Amino acid sequence: MAAIRGLRDADEVVVVGGGAAGAVYPADAAGTLAPWGVDVRVGEGTAVLPLSLTVGRWLLDRAGVGRPDEYRAVAVDAGPEECLAIGAELAERASRVALLVMADGSAALTVKAPGYLQPGAEDYDRALVRALAAADVTALGALDPAEADELWVGGRAALQVLAGAGRKDTFQAEVLYDEAPYGVGYHVVSWHR
Image 1 (cartoon, helix red, strand yellow):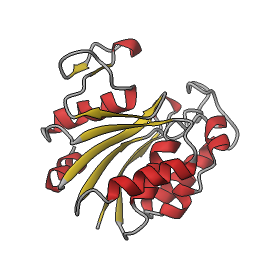
Image 2 (cartoon, helix red, strand yellow):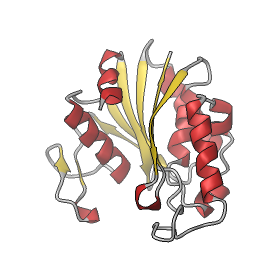
Image 3 (cartoon, one colour):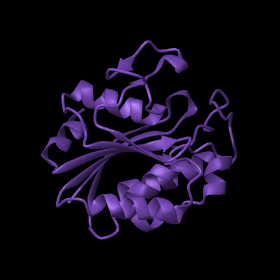
């Protein structure tokens, strides 16, 4: 939660995550985890946030950060150039823009994973962590959508938004968590100037 609490110092906070289609949601948008069998709801009103942004809002609420300025869903099948352009646009909004990027690594890392065990998934996930740990926007921007789909990498598009946002700056990165519970790559990495 410490990494999320650090978002308070930003001029603008945007939660970025994958969705069925690209969309912008306001700060008070609601979401629910009920379709995934968990009785958790965030916000009031009709639940509209996709899973990634619902989890992002839940994390912000738990950390006591408050509402972001917006939630940005990027279509999971969006091309790299589109994702990079979205990131660049977000980075230009204010002097200190913080992105909470909600992005899974491979969901094919073990035989019990949602995507079963796929050859190459572990190597892909390790390369992804190396890119995040080095704040390597070039490597993140070059992620191949077809390979990501094959290896059940649900967060590729959101990570490429991050790459687009970080192209004009140099960041220090800190890996805070790097595990694969349930055979899904989960990585918590903080980037800061």
